[in-house]
Image 1 (cartoon, rainbow, N blue to C red):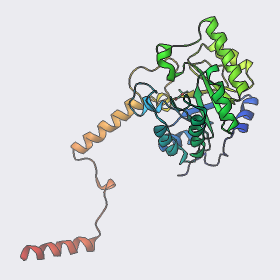
Image 2 (cartoon, helix red, strand yellow):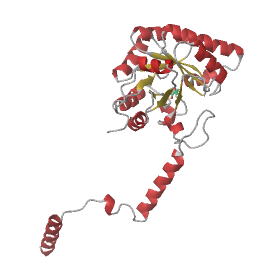
Image 3 (cartoon, rainbow, N blue to C red):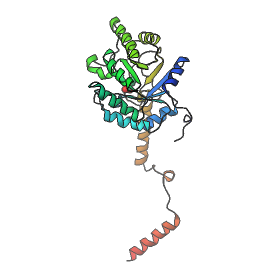
Image 4 (tube, helix red, strand yellow):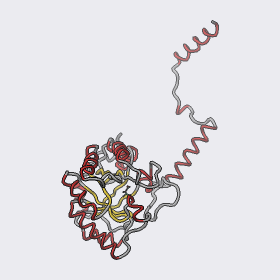
Length: 291
Ligand code: KIV
């Protein structure tokens, strides 16, 4: 498939860092299949995240907790097959990096073997050993702090994090320690804008925000949120750039109406039978009728 951005060169960690050092902001979008990946890459995003939000967005779960390595591998492979020029990140799902360092390396390394260029995992100081182990195994890691959906029960819901002074200090400390352990980027979700901006100033590695205000080095959004593909009210931090849900429902309803009214398909969507074949068919049918 050709697209105007196929001429882009492959984005890599040094290129992302260069962009941020030059004062640019990074645009990261989630993608869960080849269609999403092609759209995101054609639009020229810097980074594609195969997020474990696939559980909520595509698989009908009400949290990311049931998402398995098999599910993530399936979706990562679909995205990777499109060979995006955007830097490709895969989310380590719940329990894929909690049980042992060996298992974490195997799971994260499997992502790299399937085409990811980095992995993302959730949590602060508790994750330092696993971050070090992955970095030692040549696996680039993005840390994810603040509202970490895999800790939904520990947090007591999907609420803004680190509003209290001690929590804000803890988050900054976690970010510094993740950086020291080797994370090349820190993602902050659902935290006050002032705190995210402060963390961004204090860190040497770039930050990516979602619900973390404009002061980060880049922003990430969920594909379906950006295009307005999900019904109902969205989170405060979402900006819909399209009325995807309403427009899709209306298009499908128009098609169903055309089918029921005999208006679809018409000649434009139909194949023709060449004249000799039609004639031969008529002759054969009248012969059959005589016998
Ligand atoms: O899984 C995901 O989509 C994420 C983003 C919301 C950051 O982790």
